[in-house]
Length: 576
Image 1: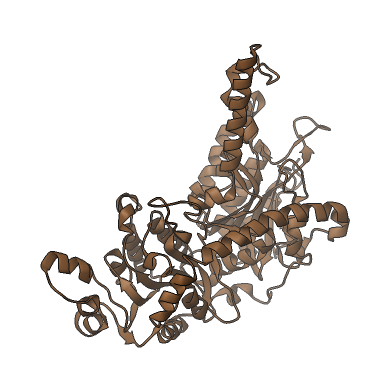
Image 2: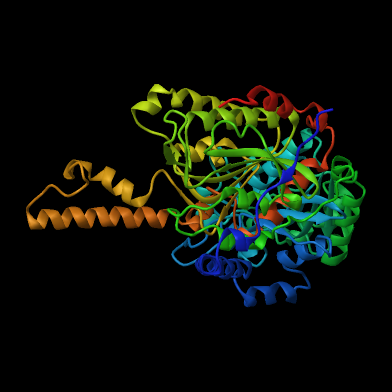
């Protein structure tokens, strides 16, 4: 009977790296991760204590207090989109921390849910530029994983001075309601709690939910009292127009009224408790969740911040998989890539990761070539592995540290374009949940081929070390000024002024590109979903993998005896 031949991988840190190098790497990573923690705290503060006090004075909780009360006491909230709009100014001086909405994964009554909460300490929960897209991104995660979706609504509508950037377009505010509809059409439970202002689009968002609760301070209106006063000269409050008296007892747009925030949160938890429990325990079988043998907290000391330095990719996997056990699939081909299966939290997941350093060259026996690059054998291997994961229903995790594709005459003769297209097709049509982690480099077409965000992973995470770009700053500067350089990339001009201008221009390009590669730039623009500590990657994978198995019956999940993986092993066994 075929079984999953998990074997021990990795080694104790002392056998991998000496104390000096480990501490050196750890120190460099700590600087970056301290910046991450400081900026995360800055975002979580919203518009500051003054606005928190305003909320409390009304007898209400802040959005983050509501989220903390909603999730199970022994769990944590895994936030996505923390740094959307980070560092941007609107109207000259206003900021929108986290785009004024909190989104992420929270465990409620033992079930993972997607939580979407308007941040009422940032412009009363208004929708800024990118707020609609951020909400829709969270809704798409819920749809892909069939996770219950909980809306904590306290939204005063669009931030009108910036309406042209959030109202129109294919992903404008109105697309939120289409996503509400798609979630409903696919049977994904949606529960909404309305805590306060719920104006215009904010009023539409909860309506399609399966259950809608309102506090006594809440109202849902197409237009608020101020607008009605101006348009119709009627003196009336928003509560009079669309409070719980209207929507619970007259219109039927809400189901239940409750006195306050705390009661509403308890009611939402009760609704989630009524849903079917998680199927994750069924898919675990007798394999309980277990930590890796080698701690994930060591990763910041094992992966150098300098992208030019190599490390052992197997040691990364050993710090992500349960018991540090792993089945490498097709090790005989494509040495530059590692792919295989391990357990995360007791549940099977596929992994693809780039080797670093030098690997053998099958076309030139005895020769070595750089890894972190996609060659023909590796592309074919991970393409087949991606299809197998899709066929078997195994969640697939891409761990990127890639410089791109092989280039040159041999690469074109070896049809890398065709092999790359096959890989892209495989990833684009995958039916199993897929997640991407940018460990360090994510460069050029390699970023695309290894299931970067344009290929729609359910979630893409970056680390503080991530560098997302077409090419490195120095390389791009050389390409930009190519006509002014010789074959050794030295400036051709002899005129001192022209040489200075060329050198200054190259430096400007290199510095600008290096700045653009900062993971906070990608997170601000929603080119990645979240920035996480390297040591926290394992905890994130536990959430994402378990979420993949929580809902039963909506996708194929084969039992391990009939995996396509077994066929791959037999087909390539002994191949060199």
